[in-house]
Image (cartoon, rainbow, N blue to C red; front, side, top):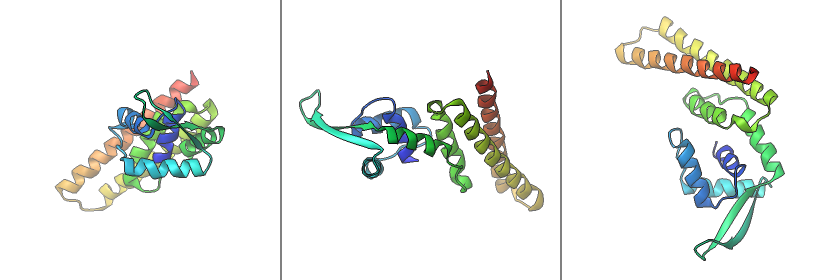
Length: 170
């Protein structure tokens, strides 16, 4: 997910590593807050793959800085990362899916529709799995409440995606 976030920020403007971190935290802090220790190796991987290029120059303060920008290949990779099938791990699904939805404006209408379809199908599958556990297992109070809350989260997420689907038709 860190590569997606970096490419998304660089699709908007040229940034330093500090700028990338600041932009990600400013926009996605309620979903994720990657550290420099996560951003730096991800930037290196993206640059080695040709998705990002760097340029050293002097910052406004007169100090040498490295500025990063996205390449055409990086734009293609960003779109590919957004429309990748959702994660299989249910714990990571909602966060990852929300990040993808937040970045969906870089996709064309057809790619957006495909993304919405993939995310909705996965959320519906996880909702059914959660409801089945609640029906078939003798759950005590706390697990039952947690799964009930999870059911609500999946239903809310499905409603969110349906709202995007509706808006994209208009």
